[in-house]
Amino acid sequence: MDITRLRGIGVSPGIAIGEILLPKRVVFTSRKEIIADDQVPAELERLQQALDRTRDELVRIRDGIREKAGPDSSLIFEAHLLILEDPALVSGLEAVIRDEKARAEWALSKANARFEQLFESLTDDYFRQRKSDVSDVLKRVYRNLENNREKEKAPQKPHILVAHELLPSEAALRLSKELTLGVALDMGGQTSHTAILARSLGIPAVLGLRDITRNVTEGELAIVDGTDGEVIIDPPPAVRREFQAKKDKYENYSRELQKTARLKAETLDRVRFVPQANIELPEEVALSLSMGAEGVGLFRSEFIYLRRESLPTEEDHFEIYAGLARGAHPYPVTIRTLDIGGEKSLPRLNIEKEPNPALGLRAVRFSLQNRDLFRIQLRAILRASTGGNVRVLVPMVTEIDEILEVKQIFADVQREMRRKGEAFDEKIPLGVMIEVPAAAALAEAMLREVDFVSIGTNDLIQYYLAVDRANESVSYLYKPFHPAVIRLIRSVIQAARHAGKDVVVCGEMAADTPSAVVLLGFGLRTFSMNPIFIPRVKKALRSIECRTAEKIAEETLKLRSAQEIEEYVTEEILLRHPQVFLTGQPLDASKK
Ligand code: PEP
Ligand code: MG
Image 1 (tube, helix red, strand yellow):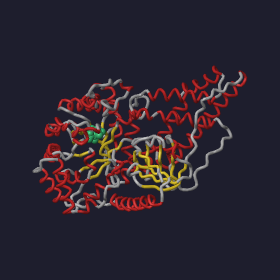
Image 2 (cartoon, helix red, strand yellow; image 1 turned 45 degrees about the horizontal axis):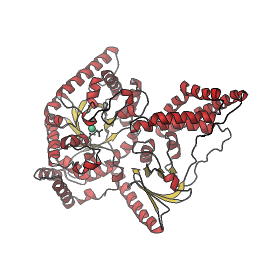
Image 3 (cartoon, protein in one colour; image 1 turned 90 degrees about the horizontal axis):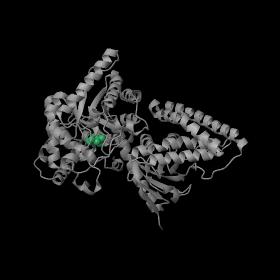
Image 4 (cartoon, protein in one colour; image 1 turned 60 degrees about the vertical axis):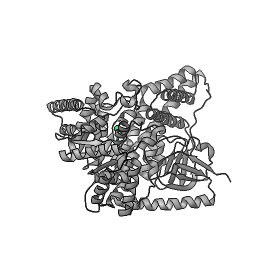
């Protein structure tokens, strides 16, 4: 028998087995229904009532979510209310009804098509995804045009939720910790709202499946493997048994790992280390803390820009930073200033397409050429720092002069705030990312100018080895254990320790168990990573003696290739502290 196996992106690990639930989709009409002249006022009234009902609904959802998940999670509905109340949108809909003598359904359908076209023409992937917010609001209004529409009943029994796309409000409403066993969508990726929510609720999810909705019917049995990014429709008993075993194993692992979240982060010989979280959205703070993060080691602030259609104001920045600082308090939150440019282009910022984006006008280079934007961001960070737990991190620094310029601007903004009597943390630490090899070579001098450094191994490896981090065809050359790479990283860690300053590794390397052991051995104590990996790394480092890690790390310097180093480290760990690997690798599929 043929079974259907579909591959997608595993965005929330774990296995779910259950019956499919396929919620009805709103389909915008493609038929223009004409009305008589004297029906126009009634049709306008009908639209107005649908808008009112939608507003009430959104306010209810916003308040409910705020209560359930805190103010940060309800921000999206504030945005939806703003979209709904946009006078241009409403007058545009009314104009279609009035001028074309068409039904409100047609006006909404036309508006939706126009927005879709507009967003599709944007080059930035993340930004393009924002069309779902507008579409979400329009669909809600469309549904509300039917006065006596059948209210969609909330599901009563456990199910696998299959849909084309889950709009942000639908994701917040439909995903239930108790009843949603798993999620499988045609659309979506790692940074979508559904992915984030599924992760924080612990619901296995596979997104980006393209056409799963066309391959299934309601009530059919399905397996969602969020770890490996696979969905299996109508599995025969043997496959079901195989996945049931995988599910049990995974759940045991997670229970084990979750326990470590509450345990002290120290090695067997009592050397303290600090796991922290790399996050892109304020909503991820709670999940990070529950995974055992002792603070946010990297907040990628560019996502503030990528998530909205207009430039964020100082107030927009401030609310997000203040929320982060409050959410993580008393732990620190490290806010990285804008790392935009290059491949993360933003039409609104008029960044030109560059022939060599990774080497172009990005990150601090962009901030120093757009000082007004930079000052707005710095002011907002300073205002959010009054709790004493905010740090500022500057990306992609290449030379000392850049730090000096940043410091000058930072001091200037502080002076201005003092003059106006605005409060901020006078001791707010300023750090730089070490992710350009030249900065690593200059670490000692850089450290004299800043309070801490953060090693961004993702970019550092890319630039040092001249291997595009996103190019599959050269990924075989992208080697964190390259002998040159580990020497460079070691030298930065040592420079920071000699200077008595904080050093963090915030690239993916910190989340890889053998690498984390070597980094510990080189003297690293703060490891910042995607929160999902914290329990695994914490458990691994709790299972080893720091002394052993030091010996292993020292030995790697005698080896000549990445492969030799990797084999040596793995074997040594297995020989001396096999428990390090006992957590297995079930979380790997969700690696960003
Ligand atoms: C890095 O380069 O390692 C890093 C953490 O930053 P990003 O992945 O955002 O470039
Ligand atoms: Mg980087």
